[in-house]
Structures are given as C-alpha cells and as structure tokens.
Image (cartoon, rainbow, N blue to C red; front, top):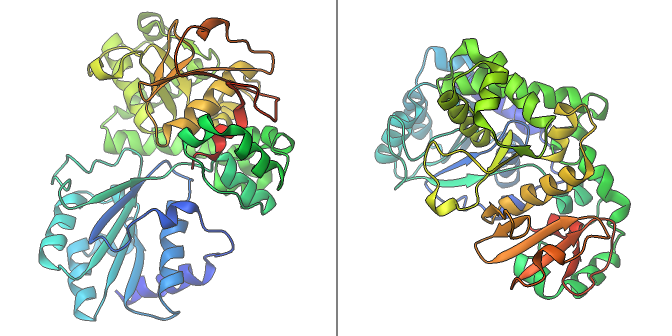
Length: 399
C-alpha cells in the first residue's frame, strides 16, 4: 500500500487547481459510494484528484487515489486495499479506471457492507454497468455521468470568462435577458467556431498540436479495449467497428438503412444493431429515435449522429457539413440533461416530449414548425433573439 501512497502524493502534487469543472459542485461527495462514468478524456481522473487536493492537506493518509490498473492489484485485491486502508484511519478511497478490474462490483459491494465509515468513489468508462454485472449496486451507488466541455466551460477554460449555467426553460422564456448578460462579458460568436473545432475535450490544453491525434487515440482505445472487455465484442471485429464509425461520420446525418450498412462492413444485420448500441453507450455516436418510449432493444434508430463536433472533425477529415455540425452541437449539449428525440416531419428534434426545435443558419425560417406549439428555431450566426428564433450558441450554457 505504501507504493500506492507514493503515487498518490505525486498525483496530488501534479494536479492543477486553476480551473475546476462545475460538476465538482453537483456531486454529493459525502455519499458512501458514488460512481463517475464518461468517455476517456473528459477529465474524470482530474476531477477526483482535484477534490482530494482541495479537501486534504499534502501528505495526508486519510484519503487515497489510485488506479485499478495499478500493478499493485496484480498481487492484491481491492478488498485487501480497503481493509488495510481502514485500519490506518483511511476515510476516502477513490479508485479510477475501475472497469479494468475484473469482478470489481462484487468487491465494492462487500466494501460498502463491511466498512460503513469509508467513503468510496469509483470512475470508469461510459460503458460502466452499475445496475447489472456481478453485483447490483443500484441501491448503494449514486451514479454521475461526465461529458466534455460545454461551450460555457470552454469560454472559462480558454478565455477565463466566467458565466453561469442557465436552464433550458430560462433560455426559452427570457433569451433577451440572458443574451444581454452574456454580451456584457464577451461576444460568443467570436469564439463559437473555435469551440466547434477544438473545445470539447479538456486534453486540448495539454498539447493543442496533437489534439486530433489524441482524439483518434480515444476512439482506438474505446473500440480496441473497452468494447471487447466490457461489451464482449469479438476482437476480430474491431476493425469493422472502426469502418462502421467511418461510414457513419462521412454520411452524416445518416439515413438509417441497416441492411445496406451491414453489407458495407460485412456484418449481419442484428450484429450491426448491437454494435450501434455499443457505440452509442461509449459516447462515440448518438442514436435518435422518433418515439423513445416504445424503443425496443433491437429496433433500428431513425437517425445517427457522431457524438460531438470535435470527434466529427477527426472522423470526417475535418470536412463535416455545416448543417450536420450545428445539429451535432445541439444534440450533444441538450443530451446532458434532456431527452432528445428525432422530430421526423415535426421539426428537427423533440425535447423532453414537449418542445420542438429546428436547427439552422441565420436565414432558417419557421415554415416547417409554424403551427406547432412550443416550437423554436435555434440559428447559427446570430447574436440576439428574434421572437422564437434564438442564437444557437445559447444551447452551450446548459451545463
């Protein structure tokens, strides 16, 4: 365990505190057991380390951060670690990359039951299963999901601009007030196109020159390691999964023809449907349905989008069509806290079963949604509202 503490002290000394993401204040860190899941590269590890650095003095042995892929766990179990840690007065045990440890949920459940004074936090892949697996932790674990930077957070990271979160209802019902408040601090259109290109993953700030290579590495890691390990995808099909992702990215928004797609990558139809579901869970794509209530396990989606605009820039050779880019931005930002359905002939998207949104450029009209209640146009390249026509970038202030 001393080796883990040595690494912990190094992690703490190297963890920056200049910018802390808003989700820090949304997590109930006093929970006995919590999980933070999300795609690789969105900052889960940094968040956990920042919490410990803020709340425990340097050299403290009351808290311990470690990674489940540490060589320590080749000779010891997580349960062994918890027992030893509690004996020396440990209070908080944070275990990163928990999905890399086989049978983790059984041991975490036992730790929860044996050591009621120990607070445990685990983090892992977007594919992390809390409600199923070896042990059902649903009654014990408080789950949180983390995604990349919102446009609001990008302004904070990139420009040091501090702006609040606004709810969707606030944005829809008092957009003039919000736009005026924002424009007192900055001109969002000045920075919006840069966010679309490189504002989503926080690792941009580690080395901007290798940003797109790092995104490629995230894709490869997710498909080559996480999907075979967590979703039992045949390792021999990982190249076909990458081909599937490439086909989707270069045919956005994808008009779903599963049989045609199966033929292109030489995989049978039901396997393609399963793989699409896995890619969605891994936050590489977003599947949209026109009626999410009645979606069946193997039902084909109505539309398929790449998860975020930065990922699209890599997969589509940085030549994504502007209309698709706008829609991907909208879906990504809205999906953090809202249910997004494909609108079919009733606007582009239906939000929470209540609002109808059309997404477009500054000349986008209300023609398609003119007679629909609770309908709005979110338009790019405008900086002030005009009736129910609102600036697209406002959706970047939802989290």
